[in-house]
Image (cartoon, rainbow, N blue to C red; front, side, top):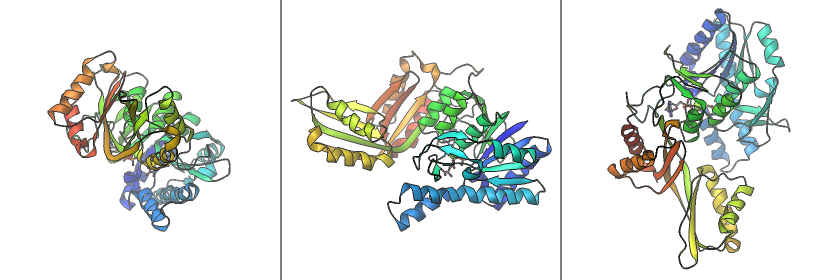
Length: 402
Ligand code: ADP
Ligand code: ASP
Ligand code: MG
């Protein structure tokens, strides 16, 4: 059996944790499995490296930043291979270059395009455990790229798909996927199973337990995932196409603090104005999320929308530079906001969900800034300081506890 096992940063944070993981790998190897391991950087190493870069240059080039960040994962794979060797397990560590994991060219947010499996197959044939760097790739200029924060999950799923692995296990510091972040909502419940679609929504709306692209890719290539703890033997959560359990109205609550709200105030109220604003942003590859347009008064209207925090400066600068062409009066932005969402395929065509969400925000005295909905989610934009309160309130209101 070929298994891909991915271990996140906390799971390899220090010597003791590295040996803990090495022993788990040893067990699987000795049971006769072909084992491919994907690792993240140790602990908070990626944050440390980003701080180090910004200390030298507040605005480092994206290429050089990726060049720096990939060292985090290289450290953990080399150390893991050394630990496996102490346990007498033959292994080899490989980075994205050595494997050849080809990505698009964009630094900091590259997408995996193709993985050469020849080297990995060769090493597996030599009966070695192959320990591979997560989060990184190589672009057409032969430069290192990274896949976005949390991207090691995507490396693992991509490897599982390209190697046709029998299993893809994501080991982390919680026991699986919960109805909400268990560190924020104490009553959160571990789910036995969840569908790709619901997991994709939770991940995209801020549930950091899985990188959203990893779920997208798992769905596309039908890779069944297991999310489980690296610290105990509990069963974990299976992410797959269809689940057996009866569908709840809402399957989970997620929050995302990485949001900035931008308001373009006093735009002319005539056709084509919204198009010009969003076309400007789209051409710069700036993803816009929630959108709210006010009703026109005295020939003027306002448009507000949200972007991720790292995109806010660029968006504001673009709008500032186009002030005359777009013909607006004022630009405004707020960073201390957060999105809180309830997600669930069961809410499709159930009109009561949005009302219940708004009611529980009201009961908790939380003001709603913006709203967006789809068939399977309701999202509210609120003050960031209310995030934890809102998550707990929504979790209670939809009866998600045991
Ligand atoms: P790793 O380093 O293993 O990739 P992450 O920190 O990226 O770990 O992801 C695990 C964390 O995700 C947990 O510690 C938990 O706080 C958070 N999390 C957010 N939402 C959820 C959820 N719905 N279920 C489980 N964990 C969640
Ligand atoms: N080390 C990277 C990060 O911290 C990738 C990952 O952990 O998945 O974002
Ligand atoms: Mg992660």
